[in-house]
Image (cartoon, rainbow, N blue to C red; front, side, top):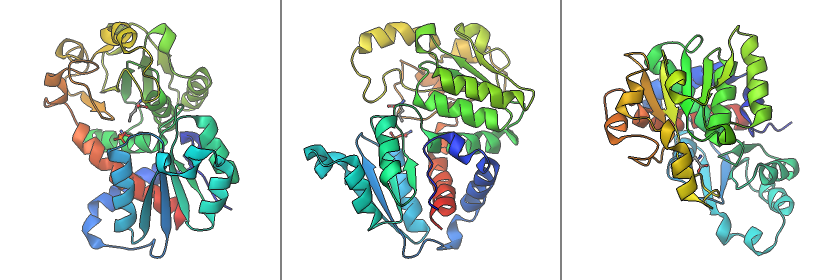
Length: 303
Ligand code: CP
Ligand code: NVA
């Protein structure tokens, strides 16, 4: 039975093991264990990518397998072939499909017709592989996850949705500080809050960024204009500017707070240059951890 990773919820029972496995693979990167020899991965991208695309490809190489990048614009999907037919055909060639899609509907359509595992490399609802790397990074820096206060600031988007779920599953106190009109997805926030309750924790939605960041262990932000959401960047700038992580906001968090950003970043918009390039920023370790997290995911789903 194939297993997909479309939402963080698909790895609810494995999230701790995946973080541990990613940490192990990071530590033992030079050992060249090749559990995926003979396995191939198709990587369909409808939107641009630097980190996700390259780290999945290198992850496959380092695990002994092969990755094939497919730009959706160069595929027959762009000329009217259905997603279902694409999934059925690719399932005859490869052992897994990584998919970056405009919509979660398309993601689920591909997964429904695929006979091999489908891994969500970002859609408009979630970015689960990112969240896994984020947790690995926080654990490395803080030594634990449960009980930490993590505050996400800005647009309640795909990255925010997955982070809320992943944080709730690992016992963190999650806060989404977003404008009321751009809070995270309601169903996901409710689900994360229910999971958090099991830990005696909560998920807070707090529109006041100054209140939200007090005593935070982790501050996190993402772009104000996501891919596929470029209709009114000026409106986005005006709406989100109070949520920018600058030195003044960071000073309200704990002294040893760390700052995460999934990247790409826009210095002077969602994050000040002095913060992202400053001593509390861990964004490049976070970006590196995409590789190790993807290896853990590929091993779990493809081996
Ligand atoms: N964070 C992230 O997913 O980056 P890319 O868009 O470069 O893959
Ligand atoms: N929220 C952003 C994340 C980019 C990695 C987007 O969807 O474009």
